[in-house]
Length: 174
Image (cartoon, rainbow, N blue to C red):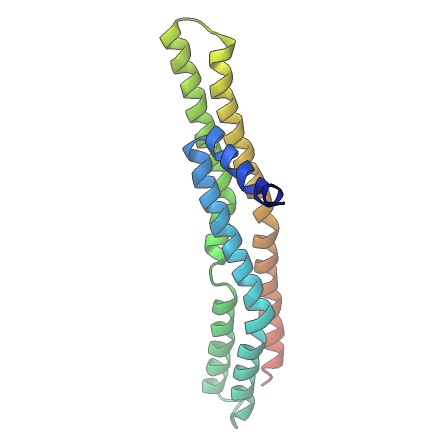
């Protein structure tokens, strides 16, 4: 049973071993990306409602809704919630395209090792080339897989923030 539970960790360890340093960086980016994803999910699911209700109650408690000052206060309240909703989304949007680039870096590094081994031996031995090409392909695959897994959360939370901001603007009536 323990072997079954530890199998994913062993697989990741083997992937890191076979891919080199670039896969380690991709794995770090993956952990950070999914940490932000779960944090944003928690925010939208549990914290946005009470925060918006508090600000909405403050807005409705005001007597003045028509003056220029009141409109600026309304704008600031909506903006404050929008900033909270979009927190860390910039990092998430950077990590998604960064992972394939790290994979490309690992690919180039692996191919350079292939060429170095070919130059050192003076021949194009298929076995010597296979190790470097394998490392290159593992880096590419890992970078693309992590990036693909982060595309939807980045899009979803960006759209969710826009939608919730529009809903809040409608609730904060003049």
